[in-house]
Length: 265
Image: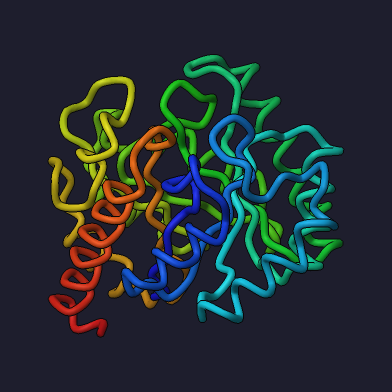
């Protein structure tokens, strides 16, 4: 498994800051945030201008470019994301499901949209992943399985985030077992409680919450998963850089300890 972190943790700072401190924390790679409003990192409207700098930073700091997160399913935005991914060398583009929970028509529309985007991703030679998201049309294991059944393209995969599954009142370890054969990316963070949001950034740090992340990583290891495991901490845009660094380092230490406990490292 490759341990990475989404640059959105450093959303209040430039990309050089994100690369520098994630490298110092010992991560293998980085997931680039293309999330408008949460960062000014991979801004898709000017990706051609930004691409050379991203490649330079990756080489300078020795961080692999593991994935990109871009939440919109707008076809033009997604095509720009796929084009940027090809140019920069990013193999995976992650998105959210959108839509509305417990609404059959919304779920069908979401699955149709994802299927079309997965076809586009395949033409560009990249992988589109979607994760279950609180409040979205795909939000738990049954709805994830519906998407997996409908979209069989090799350019489509599941991005598993235990915090969203936990807040859907499910056991993330058991949920992962049901879908792990189609998992191509993992967003990881902890969560205290089962409220709507994931909590303040500090409590999203691995080891701070209620989720059995050791059991989660053990399922990944037992299944032979070797892809990215990217920390995703939201809400820290106004944090001083020292707090962002502490969250990154604490979480990476927990992830490393879990891998060692599973004899995966």
